[in-house]
Image (tube, rainbow, N blue to C red; front, side, top):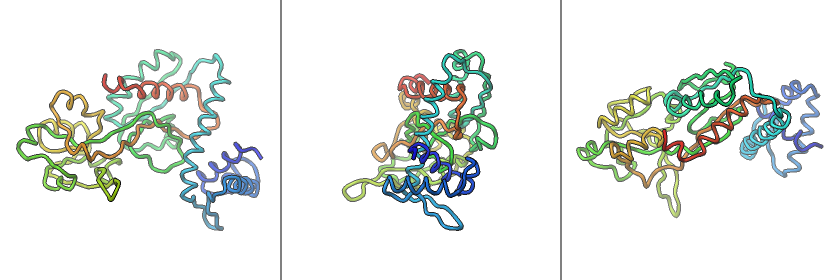
Length: 306
């Protein structure tokens, strides 16, 4: 049995939630999908799905394997598109969405540059902190920052996103400097109330036994806002401590307008991703856009320059 077909069937069943739906999409009998999954699990020696008459659930190993399979199938599709496209130019309309603050600073400047390379492509850029339904709203690609929720979308990690606590030197002189994340309860902490990546709170890496663990705290204060730029301005005006990404505050840290605190407790970085719906044949314009983003976001000088 074709190993690639087994992987495609596993992804189809896992993302659609049932053997019947996956079989209908491919035009085969559910029993055929079931045999492919059985063969895959037997070959791997691990249970990927728990199947009952009422529901289908991914095991822990199945969830991790699903993400790997989605990336693998996307790479295969990209390779096929690259060969089959040959000398054909990218064309058509590209619809892209990105978080408002990040998109203004790091995606919008790249859009005209991409079109200079591909003059037959037209582009619509949507900037919103709302998590857009790509397939339902007809978007080709999203740039997302932070931990990604489980979904049937395919993601490509393009760069690290490190978060850190910052405040002005004046604020720290007036109020002191926290020495441990638990100290934040005594300080004015400003939170971004609409940012999905902060729902669990601010992340810190603290000692535990012979190693470390990541904890999440939800510090409070007199000010919160749904707009990251306003929060950034408040922090620069000395109203408290904020937890921000390096792409937002690195220049102010370098100039001395902001100071990083609790640096030794900074959590491991999460990611900056290109996210797109799973497709059998990815349009050339989408593939080239993702490669273009990855090329720029993967260069350290890009972040220093913006």
